[in-house]
Image (cartoon, rainbow, N blue to C red; front, side, top):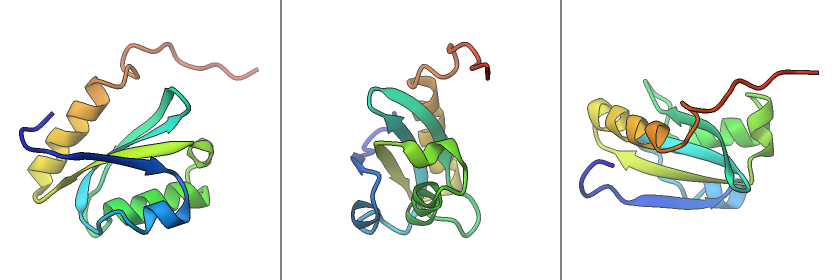
Amino acid sequence: MVENAQQQQGPLDKAEIALVPASHGAYRLWDAGRVLFVGMTSGTRTLRSELLRHWRGDFGHTRNASHFEYLAATTANEAHAHYLSLYLSSGLRDASPRTRL
């Protein structure tokens, strides 16, 4: 993790998302104890706007996330460093692909 970064978390609900800063950063969505998704902000999108998109179901399966965690960033480079930190520690890289029945 990037030095001095403060990781925050909460349930994926509208009230909790409203408390997330409208800033750049990286985030991770969980379903109980399993990571569903790792993402980062870019352009005009913020942590709050991206989490709201997941809550609304804009990305399908991530609507079922039980909670989220995020690391706010002040620059694009810092957001990318946070994303790499969250992704590499998530276990997604080593997970076998899911197959549909």
